[in-house]
Image (cartoon, rainbow, N blue to C red; front, side):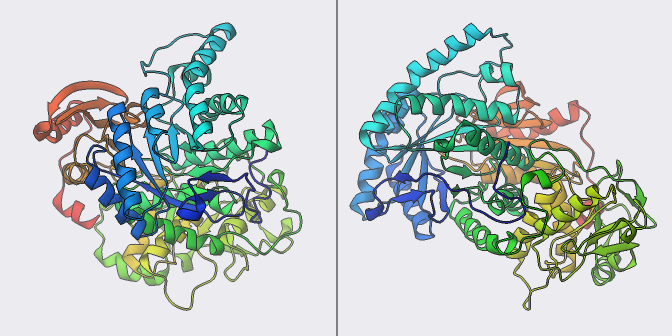
Amino acid sequence: MRYCENPFVFHRRLTRELVVGDPARGGVIIGGTHPVVKQSMLTCDTMDTAESVKQTLELVAVGCQIVRITAPTVKDAANLENIVRELRARGCHVPIVADIHFKPDAAMESAKWVEMVRINPGNFADSKKFAVKEYTDAAYAEEIKRIEEKFTPLVHLCKKLGRAMRIGTNHGSLSDRIMNRYGDSPLGMVESALEFARIARANDFHNFKFSMKSSNPKVMIECYRLLVARLEQEGPDWNYPIHLGVTEAGEGEDGRIKSAIGIGSLLCDGLGDTIRVSLTEDSPREIAVCNDLLEQIPVLANTKSSVSGFKSQADLGYDPFHYERREAPEIELSDTAKCGGEQTVRVVVTRATFDKVAPKISPKADVKPEGIYEDLSLLELDPTQDLRIEDINCDTQLVTVKDGVQLPPITAFRILAAKLKRLGRGNPILLKDCLNFEPVPLSPEVALLRAAVNIGSLLADGIGDAILVRGESGAGQSLRLAYNILQAAGCRSFKTDYVACPSCGRTLFNLQTVTARIKTRTEHLKGVKIAIMGCIVNGPGEMADADFGYVGGAPNKINLYVGKKPVKFNIPEAEAVDRLVDLIKEHNKWVEPDDKEVAAV
């Protein structure tokens, strides 16, 4: 299977064009050779026409090209007529997407008024019961027939009205049928989407795109790679566009880093026709991050240079569809830390950064330098040159890419790892976020995105035993950024981890306020993962690897979860954070905060 033309040189995946609305009047064409399209979602109640119009206009003003609005009921779907009418009366022709979960009737109503309908194969025709059941081939075929009966009317209507469709699977909401046959896996997500695509194609409907979203960047990257590979296997006319996004990414640095790792990695490999950065913040802020991220891709992707002997996926030296950390021997990194082997990925800083941050760091702090770049026993190599086994003394020599190499870091380190494997060497690798320095220091926003894409992409490939961030000029900021990248990539846990959805019209409480409240009480719980979900659409599934979940169950009522199991129901919102803390204490995950330690971190 092949997920891109060449993982060492950028080639954008050529897709068929998807027409959304009237391009002559504000609509867009997705795919082909058209630029990547930016989109976002409203956070208000869909029945509030005035606020929906206001938020849409605010998004369009900052460059949003597609606006998604949830339609949880037929009543909400019907009100899309009023929203769209008012927008068009104001001269706004941005395409509107109706977001559908559970309600085929709402999808049918929505298609009358909007340019695109997003359906989730995991719950379009199924209600989630977490049932364990063995399906014979005959029983499975009957399930497909049942889905076809529910889905075909929407396909016919979209075809008749010239609507577009997004077939969007979520890691957190796969159907019981898919879960029982494929498990909670990237393969299950892909097969779930392909089932619906086959129904669309059987009715000669092709105006659709795919999405494969997860809150875990590693899972998200694997899903999209597998999707593209499976589409290529199906045939050349399966070249449908894809939408990229890391769902429930959260807020602040963490949300931006997670999104940059997942979206940026795939964009650098030439995948992706539309994107959304899902932040638990006001929606217009998502577009600013989209703009910054898209501007970095020509710098971060290898658009020019080729290296002899590295032309295809087969030259990578690892399986891009299944994460496995590259094997390396354990070595002494410094007087206080080891790297490689079973050790966690370590954080290295420059001498200048160490001298600035060391006096301010508490001995108990989890965020601290673990090696000084200038003091390392380090072999710096140029992967564009021929490497010989005699160039590398032994497997226990720490290696990195030499500064000044005229390749982007992702390409350079992929080639370095591949060449080491060809030589039979498993040397631990120090990753760098940059190999060439800009004449003017990068802004913190750009430095964050570049470091997250470069280092995060490689970590998701299984490459890297220590990391060095230098693109961020601030000493303390660069140290914190390195640790945050490791946490976002799932390589290390040094603080509380949060999975927080970005809010929409289904949300049953103020996500920004509640997230801030929960963080204030729990941000000292190192290694604990807490999910904060506005409703149950993706809640239980996306919380599968979370320790605890805070989920909107009804207006002003909260359900609390342990893993994906609900354990407390209909808690008044005013009491819910306290009850969450009590639940954490019941499961012996609570520690009392140390004010000095928290301040140091």
